[in-house]
Length: 524
Image (cartoon, rainbow, N blue to C red; front, side, top):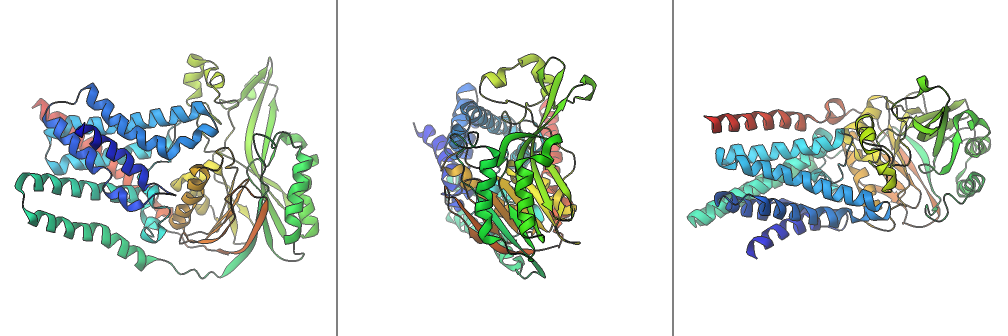
């Protein structure tokens, strides 16, 4: 029973630390109970299946409490994400348990930290991508503490969390062995250094919020229920609704940017017919009223393919001799140039893409569809295109899930983006932590890139975030509204934008090196 409480404690502490409801400092002790009971079981030689399942239980609690809301979008997706992600976390700890006795404390703890960071990096790059619970995300509601993410990205936060947990773990082991209070005094000093110095650095490097130029930006929030309204309303209805929301904000002769949510035009527009679509009409109506404005909005669109030689791995079969490419896209319209398009390229697993389609689909057939998962694979693009709003100013068209990927977002900035725009739906999960966490994570992208964020969400939260992660203004959830702000435009390049995720790259090398050393030592 006592062991069970240790496993339970880690799961609960991780969950209770998580944004947006949590108390983030709990993350600094969250792994300690698991590390302590793990050390005991390892020394007793009890690292078999019961131990594995106990660790799994611990991570399952964390995953379920923080991401249960996926159920409102897809029950299969929720089960897959929670069960598989918990399993992967458990495998990291289990591998660590197998080499713990083969190395000294510094090497074994370094191995766990590096292996965990490598696991987090895997979630950013593979087809089963799910980086939602990367430890560095835990500080998204306490951004004043992590201004140094402009150098490290969220992996700096993950590294910080793990180092502090192992520092406490080591001190507890020493105190249990020697019962010497000086160990606790040294621990207190180390915690002041390991926690206090990064926080001090954060306050020292916090940027000023003065910008040489601004752009009046209007985020539209139509509040369309995707389960009751979105696919019942026609594109003409949606066009009228968006124009109604836009009308009070249109200022003829003033430079403005209007944002509308991801796939707000959801009926499926064939690209060849875009010119006569209701979506195009909406954009043009804004531009007629104010030729100095620009409009950025989401659309669901497709292309038909009649030749098998023209289809790609992302093409979907329609019927004999006919395929189609399905797009979740952003459209950018201005008065002086043709419409431009960007296609969402970080896709939701099992909903917008079939992971490793070329390998798994021949084996699994339509099981993803049968289980309520993928309906059509979306077609992506290679480059992170930006849309120019001035000669030296451009906006990044970030669509929904893409905003969770820090290094991915830096590619927009490298291509000239001076403002991050996020268009998303966020109604699929209801009024849960799902949309709140998604909004909160956008603050981290602002810090990493030192760019302001303008966000249009179908049901909320829409709003604006400055480059230090502070909120300029925001809407409430589940209301039909629009919000505007004179958003600052910045053009400095951060260290993180230039060099990306250095920490996990180093961690992967060290994890492999330590693992090979441990295996070689064992054989010796």
